[in-house]
Image 1 (cartoon, rainbow, N blue to C red):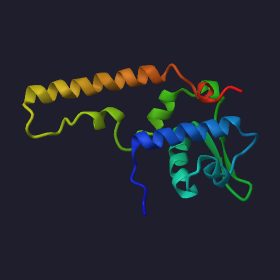
Image 2: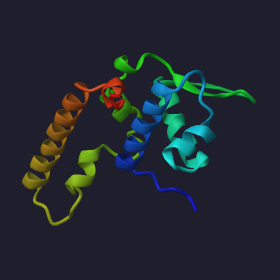
Image 3: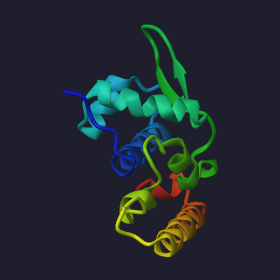
Image 4: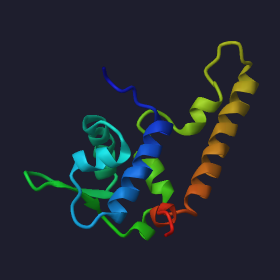
Length: 138
């Protein structure tokens, strides 16, 4: 069974994976990370691929391989993660259907503008938080 990409679901897993990496000493193997997140390694590696492409984490190949943060946790915003995980559509595209044939052109245009504005709100809010903010305080 193939996991169907869901930006909201993958975003949550990506944040959790980054928190694990931020609190892990050294290079973390994907199997160990999957165990901590109670997820399958293959599914997690798909998410990690996007984080590598987004230059948020580094991957080390080989027997002693695994993943590590590409920069300190306080320098990775949740907006960075959100942008890296936009594999399907932005969150707002799932909130409002702008492709309905029953909408008038004016209504459709207004809804498209609203989703664009909502996307700006989301990104603005996510810029205010970092991975370091997500690490539980002891």
